[in-house]
Length: 333
Ligand SMILES: Cc1cc2nc3c(=O)[nH]c(=O)nc-3n(C[C@H](O)[C@H](O)[C@H](O)COP(=O)(O)O)c2cc1C
Image (cartoon, rainbow, N blue to C red; front, side):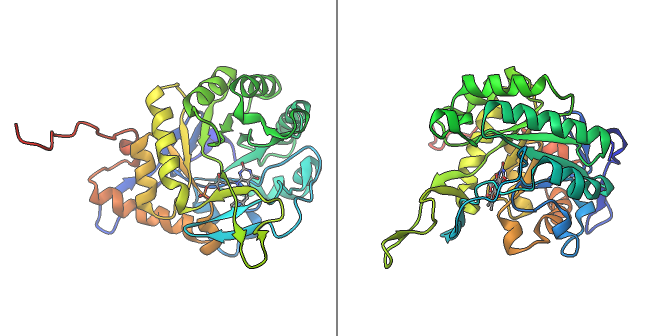
């Protein structure tokens, strides 16, 4: 769907006041601020019978690489207190499979399709960005790109591309040369200074920031004396990471880098969404919560109108970046 044709969304709350849920995310007009996160919503078609995909502000696809990947050996997911660990290994259909089997469906949707992508080498990132740009022109189904820089850099012994701001800047710059599509960059939280990384990718040409990807973690099965997933380490997601994600979104928003932020991490309710908006995100993505309830993101959209009404905002965008830190002194003088 063409980015400029998107209609402003508004929903009637439980009273009579219409709440305007639309947000402007850079060049993209979203009918509401709720998207689904990469790797938790397939290529959207898988959810057609389970939820109203068109009601979403957008969908973010599973990460695409130039060629198909079969992912890591099992077990590659395990549950933890307040979340899960996964090491799927970026299994995906590759560029040609995406063009043939996935893009036409995404193009038929009445919502934004954001295509997540990555490469195992510098050149593969660029190849993938160029390939998706061509698919956007020839087939459609690609309104924006989301670049996942949490992928291991094979040439650097498997260190994530996104942990070095210099490498991340150069990678974004190179991809920027081959596409005019809005390009969001998804940041890894597995670093010390999220603002330095955010600044580097904005300097490289990012149009938006997705914050955050999963946090490196592990689980142990004490009876078997084995790690709970075959690759030992995986990525922690779900409610456990929400406070960390909020902190990082707030830090980057406060740095005022001039691009919108999409908040990600443990979002499962309208109140979670509002917290991210108040902290400075313009939109959010729902991830792990989709596994427990595939209709979760759409339910949140309904609940968000009621919450906005309770918070006395007529436009959801009025919540963005409204965090107050001017506490009254606790002790009387
Ligand atoms: C099973 C699974 C697969 C994922 N695959 C991808 C992926 O391909 N690309 C990506 O950028 N993030 C991927 N993620 C990360 C999510 O998009 C999201 O950033 C993370 O799970 C935090 O959000 P959540 O706590 O709401 O799940 C994946 C997460 C899970 C749980």
